[in-house]
Image (cartoon, rainbow, N blue to C red):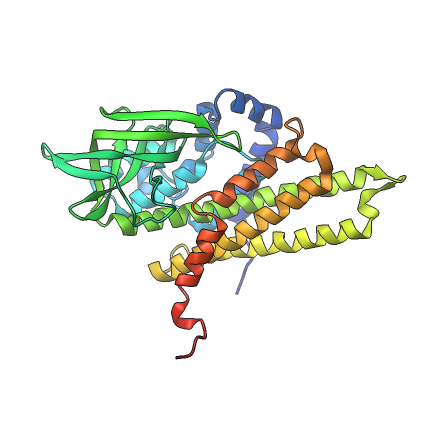
Length: 371
């Protein structure tokens, strides 16, 4: 099997890396955090590179690429700990392309690809505890259309988004709807997240909605799996940069007149971190390659990947702080921001224990238990 990236994929990686290095330095990121955690101009620059339309077919103005290209892009954005939620554009592009009726595709996909519309997934509820089949939000037909009522939590850039993909229960089953933020009955209360980004609590009160698909749970599971793959790839990029920062610090910080990188115990710690880094990378590849697999196989693979990434992100982040000492958690040092990003990503789309439970539940028939 050929695991090499194609020339086009390498060129895409290079373009995103150059943008991060030239246009998204630490000062620009800090300014965005102080301004609220989301910068529409920065998101527009990502869209100009074609990244918002990565999963959108060419006939709708997108690039028509696939999961491997998405993984390459998210790794590079992870290295720069870019705040703007490009992963949500991948989710929206993939879900609308695969499940929405033609009229919805024509209305929204070109705007998403051009960066004119930010559409985000609003699915988390306080009582759901990351379970996708638990949905208190309700939808009802109203005047020839639909209306949605309910509250969704931790919606990425929820008070800046132009529209939401909202699962809601209709007729005893979960359906998926598109609701515009400017619609009547929509209220978003924004706040900063741990990593400096932006999220919101979004309340819907008989908000006019457009039906995306009646088979909402299937579409929602696919959307979350796209999001998990993006988060895994982003985590690999954050881990890569965290490792580089830690190695650089250990080679410059001296104790007893020698660099601390010469201490055997600390070198062993870095070796353990390196093992977790490579495990994370391999499982991120696995996740991306399984995105187009049948649903059951895809769900198993993404749970395994998110579990391993959770373990690796926690291990690398915490050990990096230990190896840095006090400076590792100061706001002025960029390493602390990588640590916070890793901590947040570990919780995104379900924490490590949740996905360990998912892995366990999905291997009951092959766990080697004899009757």
